[in-house]
Length: 105
Image (cartoon, rainbow, N blue to C red; front, top):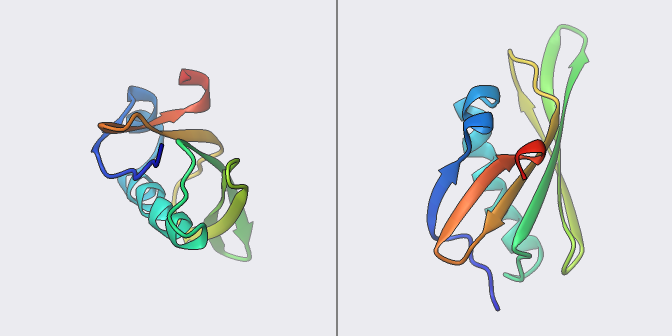
């Protein structure tokens, strides 16, 4: 089965409370970049490890984006004013997509 991540998009209450809207949008956009990397062969489960880093006076989110089949990894750096650390999953259930915190799985 081909997963397209093109259905309706939903977020859990944990994501809504802990991730700024800019980060939510970035994670949904990241799947498009993964699609290009793997020539459209997306795994139903996309994994995001998010770590806040500080370099000098600047704070940014370091995002590790992974999938298992086919195995692929990407990294993103997003300037930020907030601190976010943790793991999130994005799941394609064919007719809808859900972004949730790992502890909500």
